[in-house]
Length: 480
Image (cartoon, rainbow, N blue to C red):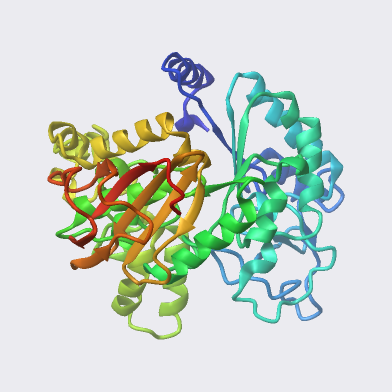
């Protein structure tokens, strides 16, 4: 693919990354290929082609309809009819992304060869796309609720494939793996990453990003507690609030208006102090926001555009459908990185694939670097703290705020060190009282997202400002 550049360019990237004592992890997409991939072109060329069984082909039902009623992530049916051979092929995502048949050992060996190629180049690991979807049920029956596409993931056999992948490939390299595990609850998730399972090192779960459309403090606390209870001491989970498939966190879960800076810092504090590996999606470190384009034509998101087409075809008002789909459009996180206030936000001298967010003149890297109180420098502080203080990584977690809708107060404790994290996730002031057992006199202020907070300030009873975040350290106590 010419637009992806050359191997020489890629090798330069790897070398420059390693020079800076950084790691390069590659995206591993092995659930599906492009419909332009040589494997698929062979597979669809005839029913007798040796690669026919490298993909999932089925005959139509007697009436010519698809083999079952499953939906894909992006389309009303997971099946696409191929006129030339008279069968349907299966696609969990776009029509142009046919699923590989992992039940075929030849497919698995070809994938393993490809993985070895990249690992032998010296990369440091894989982010494994849609890895929970590799295994398909032996019999593809109709779903009772086709709109609930959980049937696409976590099917029997997926762990057999991952253990084989580990034994044949992964264990022979000093790397890190993180799997994108859709629709997993903690009890399912631990099966992918527990150290005695010989599968992956860690995972992304989507109970927040996929299943919590708007901020819901009670639900978020429940999710954190459930994953902590199952994972602590057994495996590693990830902490993130958005990625390339979800609206930017400060817009979706925070306040991208008057409290954008404070809110972005609070969310960063939370992600870096909860149990698990924090992930920073490009642009979060300067508080980039979601977009609000006027026309469906300005959006590229295939999931959004297909849903728009489907809903308008039902006779619904196009503008109403557009407004409904905007908040969760994947394009909210896919606009170009905002480097400065120059044309296209300094991202390119050419024409970007999608419009730049119009607020780039106010929100950009150049502006952030010039402001000592910027979101960017706050992220730097959090990352430096995490590298210095093992309690942020390994500490026990204890929620002290119950199901309070606005306050999230918790401890991380390791040996004789206890950190108290206080978050007011609200657009208004909220009263806070120091929990029982904590001494107001012997605390150390580690970090605060409002610059005027002083260590000697009492927190026995205090009114927290909108989206205020603070971290205090206590030592030689039994707190939390």
